[in-house]
Image (cartoon, rainbow, N blue to C red; front, top):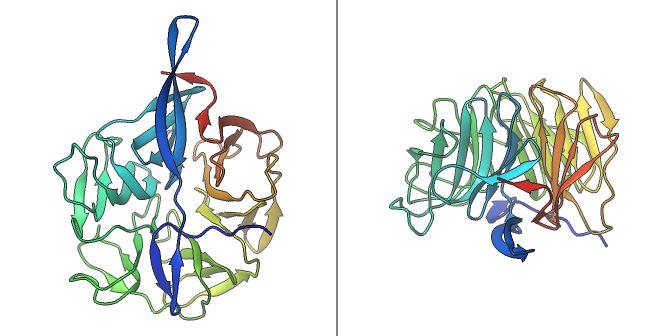
Length: 308
């Protein structure tokens, strides 16, 4: 029977506690012909996206950001924070998570933002208070949707909150018309009022800041959701679909194991044919032709390709 993956962390949803699963990142050194070649073993992935110029694919990891560009892997800038709810936007990223052991930042991070690829972090809200695993941010709108697992001083109850002013104020969404245990969440790139959520009862979209949802599809195993730059909604399980203007388009996937689901999807904003996916087995694939052919760049977490 196929396993279903849920958002990392503990989320209350309709009276049900959802326990997510975690995927992490390690690094190790192997010796070969008296030369040292670094390999990056990728686990604890909690978000993935392309930079605005399309040149780099960024992944949030247990020990910082990992970057794939021009066929090469490298570690990202800044401290090796344990990023959760990682969202790449057109001028940086938003995230939550936990600080590195050498950082002076409080644990958990709350909601943070970087405009220099992680060299520095701007603290937005709930620093030292909450770690948001269910976090989605509009690529161009910067609207923040955060699923809060428990009450705090800024969010008086559990539930879905939205901010359109970089976390200075929050509004609780009513979430009418949606049911089931949350699997994934994504924010529309430019329409701040649109957010998509998948649960084990289907895929839902709201056009009023999460107050009411309409079910687009009743599939129960959509473990991945992501908006493309054109506003199309990508969704995946052991399959990959694009939902756009009322149509559902099936996209060819690379070979996946029978118990393997897609967890993250990213589409290059500069080249619409470039798509990246990562799976629960820590396999990461790229396609440059819309899914006709796929390149494996990490096999069960072990990087494939050159290391900078």
